[in-house]
Image (tube, rainbow, N blue to C red):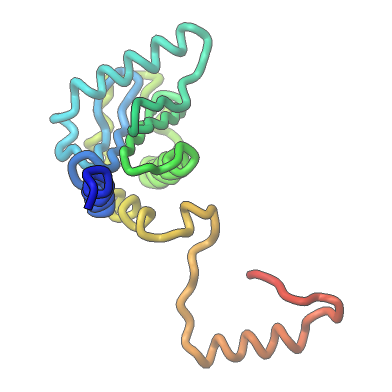
Amino acid sequence: MSDQAQADSHSDSLCSSQVRGGRHLLVLSSAGKPIFSLQHGDETSVADLAALVAAIVSFVQRGGDEIRHVRAGATSLAFLVRGPLYLVASSSCGDTVPYLSRQLAALHAQLLSVLTSKVEEVFARNAGFDLRSLLGGTDRALQRMLRGATSSPSLLLQAPPAMRAPPALRGELTRRLRRNRPGPLLFAVL
């Protein structure tokens, strides 16, 4: 096996298991406080990285622009800025920027479902507020959702997830669809 093939194989195995050097997601406040981290362990261990990301986003915003993504060699970084929340995804697995952006959007939606949209009001009053206390034990649920997104093609394809159904139910649905199908329709995807 060539050195490049071995490197690619090694990179694929790292990315598929999401450890060291694969995918990383970080949520932080505009004040640079880490809120959630996938792959970096405890959020406090990424405080320096969070401060750096906040500084970069702030610098770009002061210039009147918005940072969306950065490519550095084989690593892609995607940014999602939603008010006082900054979300960053990093991948050296060959993930596309749109895919990373969809992961960030899903993570943001999940965070808002846990925290409600009042989170922006909290940050407006106190930019240094530590949001981790409000997340409670939801870290595991967020991690499960993100890990599931990498194994399910629905996020990548922007499609609804497939639903499992017993054979009898699938057969009944097929019969009903065939019976009620308009004449010229060849097929349809539900």
